[in-house]
Image (cartoon, rainbow, N blue to C red; front, side, top):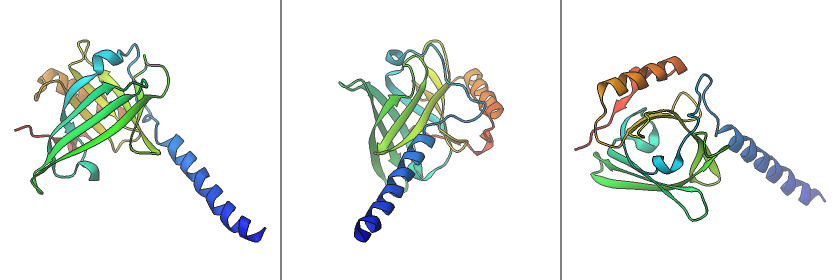
Length: 179
């Protein structure tokens, strides 16, 4: 019985910790609202990363693209690619995204390392689905995406203002090179 307790208690605490971490990681920052009447089909396809915050998974990476496609099981395949200009090599990461609520609300959770999921929230998008402002589950994660390698100044300003209102320090954004 003592051996069972020595194993069961740590395992139970570990599972509980994972469940708590998992449920907390798919949130949306306070003050942010996901796009409603979202059209997932229009969102699929290739996007260029225009700006982001610097974090370890994209350190020293330029020419970043994200391609979204429908998986047979209804989830979304996420294929991120970028060029590490320090190591002089291409990097690719394949993940999966699922809607948190209804498909018409642009709140998703994405995983590249299951069972860990993170928030992926489209908080602004133009009516033609050419430019998107995406935030993670905290003020550490933000992406500006475009169907082309550039973004009009009016859209840039609109997204920066929205991000600032939510609480993001947009002065820390990295503007991604595509060359």
